[in-house]
Image (cartoon, rainbow, N blue to C red; front, side, top):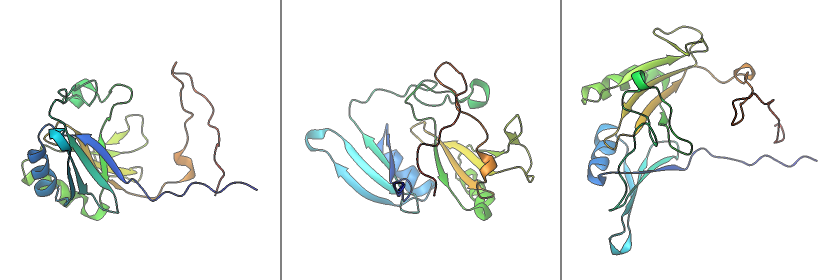
Length: 190
């Protein structure tokens, strides 16, 4: 008898590092409208750890450390000029943080971000070789708006346009040498 799959309830939290916790709180509470739900002050001035509610039981957390190294764009995070420099980041880095939003409110949320002075750009992702379309069409599977928080973290609000289908898994992964390796089913099917 096959063992049951591990049961998941979605992302609990993503932990990031803030340059300025006060500025971070202002941005997440007042621009993105995510309530601050938990704060921790570490003993002996070692830092802080704050949590924001991003919906569906998920949290975004930030550490602040007094001696944290500066950001390393293009290495540990996306370069600010994503369109010119690309979106490649180093192994084990956080490329970007995506938060789900309702499709029917997507355009209003983009307008709301822009009205608050946030530079934001929209991409309609599809399965074309370019991976994106300027206009909506039946092949678009997700709409994304990209922007940065005050710490330089590349963020995305994402709205799925349809449910995932079996044909959405159509590519074998590559190994460290860039060679395709056949997919293996390692957990029991439901």
